[in-house]
Image (cartoon, rainbow, N blue to C red):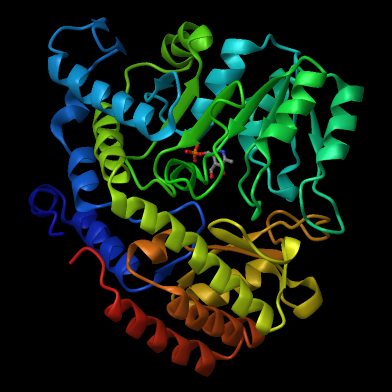
Length: 415
Ligand SMILES: Cc1ncc(COP(=O)(O)O)c(C=O)c1O
């Protein structure tokens, strides 16, 4: 990855880009929402489609010269349709957040009611946090996971819905390590005449590959990010049935966005094509197996996992019992110094602040892309334990840094 054209014009940015390639190559990317896309997706996203204005949809644009943009967007739509089995797919949202906002804008009036999971229990800002405009425009109430088990409390959710009478229930999460039972949330929504939005941002790739139950055909709306477990071009996607297709399309453009990022739509098309190949199923199930191995080995080291384990691509560690003097932020910082990049994360029943929370969240999508298996992930858990047990010990951090580099060399990236 030379970036020679950038270098001719702007050596400072070229240096930063190359340093970023080196950072990704030589450290372990364990932020659960990240991945390493293929060179093909990088090429598509770096293409001249960035020049093209294509407001509208394939065959019905507001500008001329859209014949190739049309082809590319239709490829993305057709492939997503094949991957997920949805009746209607909109591939234009610039992000997962904007995909969610399109659903609210299409279906709700200001002041309508949203019932969604609390942020500190694994929800997302775009589900109605007051810092997002969604939390200010609509009336939001939040549900929580069961404090004892860390699992979703489906009965509690149904009772809360009966009392609050929401217009929409949002499911799908940022830091929930367990399988989501979409039907049970759909029942709760049906009982009160609410819509159901299932946001599969994190698990889009697992759902596409059958490694997690799909909400398509169950929930009224399914949104996703396209750059996380599914490893396609960066952005979002909305899926729904034909009945809501026109409303969703109008809410994406012109409701919430202008011209689509056609280079990203091309990256989505290419990534979806890759996800249709049989290897992708193996990738998704290896991602889950790796997260289980990581979680089991962390438990062996005495770490406490929210819900006791994982069914998907991430583990959420509550440090309060095992390391009461180490915050998630302290752990994140020490681990990053050792070449292990993950994030401090709030945990259910959070007693610190979101800026320096009590937990860490670790995911396996990017490690799996570069070839890590269960043994490698158990080794990574050993390394995490060594650092978090001694976050101020520079010798330990230096030793772990060397072992991380060895693991990276054994599993090369962007050769
Ligand atoms: C559940 C959930 N929804 C939406 C998003 C937003 O995705 P984006 O960053 O593409 O806006 C995220 C991001 O991690 C997420 O976890």
